[in-house]
Image 1 (spheres, helix red, strand yellow):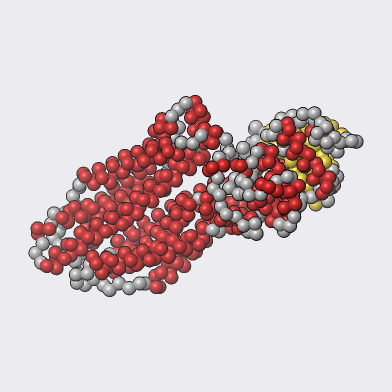
Image 2 (image 1 turned 90 degrees about the horizontal axis):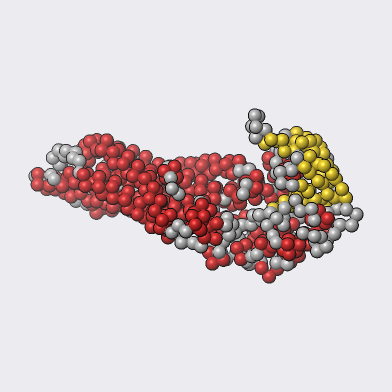
Length: 380
Length: 230
């Protein structure tokens, strides 16, 4: 077997994202399915408006967070597969040279979906643990009749079984696509086909370190996406969590905060670890030449800082727009919904916390760069 | 002047220790072209790594004009490598996504960038400035790594089997470029090789076997890259 369960165990990032996505979607979809059953029992106009608001909320939350996290999981799956193929080029090249077809090798990549299965299963179970409290909070006003928690087998199928199968198929197809390379390209370590060279316009006047910084960003666009996504999650979820105290409940706030922080850290750590691992030889060579640790880390990691600020800004706008829509559109006919305004103190607090955490993480990784031995250059 | 005194180096754990350098003592004069000759496993590459400051020895000292580099901290060693030494490896280790010019600037920027175009010209790559390593032959890639190492204007150039991955004709061409540049610029050159013929190009030949220096000889009339056998 080319790809083992041990390799799939490294997919912790996908597991965490799947867990968060399935947790949120199970909570709201299960509630949605249960709340549909009480439609005929509504007696007052206020209860009907509240009911429709609850149904819309469930749809919006599932659509937005489920969709967003699904896209991220797919991007992450593709990233892991590409990374795996890049780091196991020789073994895969030997198999191809022996006559194994792309599809036959790619079939082994189904194990990458076990990360999704694990995350989805944990998320699904976690949702059922939280559900009684969640139902209670959702109907805190008592406008709706009592809603009992029911188990809907269809959700198990749609949120756990089908995603696992879909990710297994995607993993195999994507791996087959990525394996469509000449055998020589896989077998030779530093060989790069001239047609595959990523040409970047270089200025002769631009210093080497500045160029390296730009190259690191341009050649690994997926990692730029992950850094933006990480800061986006942090910004959106921490600010949204603070607003949730007033708009929904403390429990919702804590849930959103936890999901945001976990997602942000998982993605950030994954991205930076990959940047450093992927540049170990470059770092070692730079150290051999006499570049300092500070110069190495600035050239390789410094370019991501502006990206993280962009992510933070996007997250701020996203959470404001989402809450604005919820208050102005979904809950527009509801009485007693608190007025929602952009919360500047919360944004500045979130930004300050983000800056501190980001710089601490980067400092830790800069220390890791320091530990890369110049001997790495000889280990080939 | 480089003075190596009673250098020892071993690898492995206590029970499974492999002594690679067994008390090596040698002197390398400024501007000399030294070849360290030995079979595979003789300890020649480890010797080069220790003398160049890439590895710390277990014992002994390595002095550059009286300054013992085995006592330097990590940041001092980085600074030493930046100011004093250059490296050329068998596998080139060029940055694949950067052009020839930018690869050379990796070394040149450390020495204030001046004159790097002349070095590119000196190794015959002035028309390939904007090419990527993947578009060059093995010999051309090694010439880029020579230009990169020399662009930082080192006092001492260390070469670990620089022609190991090249065919005879290309190997001779690369050696010719290196020795011409050494004569022109006067830096000290220490080259590790297992090819006895290449040793005929050096002023001084240090032969190694099983972690020890077995012979030090000098060539009165060193040969050129095109005069030696292969």
